[in-house]
Amino acid sequence: MKIKFLKGLNDPLYALHVLKTRYIKIPFKKLIFSNIEELRAESDNGLYVSSINKALNNQKSFEKFKRDHSYREILEHVNYKQGSDYLEIVRERNDGLLEKAKKNVLKSDDLGKPIKYKYSGIDFPLSPTTLRYLKVASDLNGLFSKDLSKVAEIGCGYGGQAYVNDQLLNVEMTTLFDLPYVNKLIERYLNSLLMNGAYKTISINQATSMNYDLVISNFAFSELPSALQDAYITKVLSHSSRGYLTMNSGLIGSSSKGKMSLGELREKLPNFEVYEEKPLSSDLNYIIVWGHNTEFANSNMHLKKI
Ligand SMILES: C[S@@+](CC[C@H](N)C(=O)[O-])C[C@H]1O[C@@H](n2cnc3c(N)ncnc32)[C@H](O)[C@@H]1O
Image 1 (tube, rainbow, N blue to C red):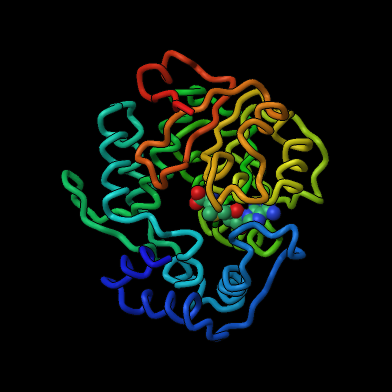
Image 2 (cartoon, rainbow, N blue to C red):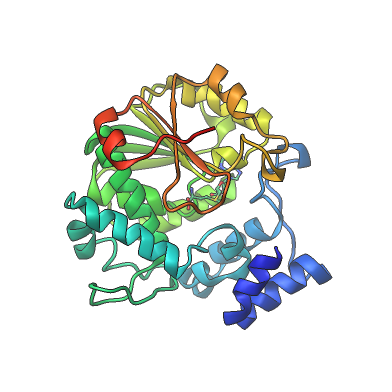
C-alpha cells in the first residue's frame, strides 16, 4: 500500500484518497457490500460497490466513473509504462488487431472518462487499461483463433474486455459473471455502445451448469475466496473446453490466503499449462491456459517455472 501511496504522489487527490481510506481510515463514504464477509473477494471492500452505486444513480458520475478513486483502487489503475509494454507486444505480433483497434476500441474510448496518455507512433491518446484488454484479445486470438463462439467471463469490471473481444474477434455470445451491482454497471456500459455479438450478465447463484467454448477471467477468479472458486469451477470452468485465467493467487504470499493453491486447481480444472504474465504486473502472477494452440504459445509465451 505504501507503494500505491507513493505512486499516487503525481496524482495528489488519489494519494489523499489512499491516505484517508487506508491509513487514517476516515469513513467518508457509505459502504456497500455484496456478499457476507466469508464470501467477499478483495474488490468487495464496501467502497467499490458504493462507487458503482453512485455511477448508477447519477448521470454525471456515470460519465466519469473511471476516474472515481475508490473505483480505481480495483480497476482502471494500469499505468503508462504497463500500457506501453502491452502496446509493444501487440505491435510486434503484427496480428492485425492493433490496426483494427486503432479504428474502433482505441479511437472511440471516452465512455466513463478514462485516463489516457500519449504513446509513440499513435497520433491520439490511449487508455492503458484498453491497451491491456487489447493485449488479452491478441493472446486469445493466437491461442484459440478469432472464432470464440460462446464465451464466459468471470469478474468483468465494466465489461471492457468483453467489448474489446466483441469488436476485434468473432464472439457470438458472452456470459458475464459478476456481482449484482456490477452487472448493472456492465449493462449500462455495454448498452451505451453497439456490439456485434450478444451478451448477458448473471450472478453465480442465478446460473446453472452450462457448456462454454472459452472461459476467461483476469485478476478476478483468483481473487475469490475458495468456496466461490469451487462454485465457479463446478458451474462454469469445468464445462469449458478452453480457458484463459490471469491469476494473482495460488502460489505463496498473503494474496493467496483463503484461495485455492495451484495444486488444488490442478486437481479441479481441465489439464492446463502455466505461462508467465507479460508484462508482469505483480511478482506472483501467472496465466493458466487450456485447450489452446501450443504453437502460438511456444513462440509468444513462456512456461512459468514453479
Ligand atoms: C480486479 S477486478 C478485474 C476486472 C476485469 N477482469 C479486468 O481485468 O479489468 C475484479 C473483478 O471481480 C469482480 N468480482 C468480485 N466478486 C465477485 C464474485 N463473487 N463473482 C464474480 N466476480 C466478482 C469485481 O466486481 C471485479 O469486476
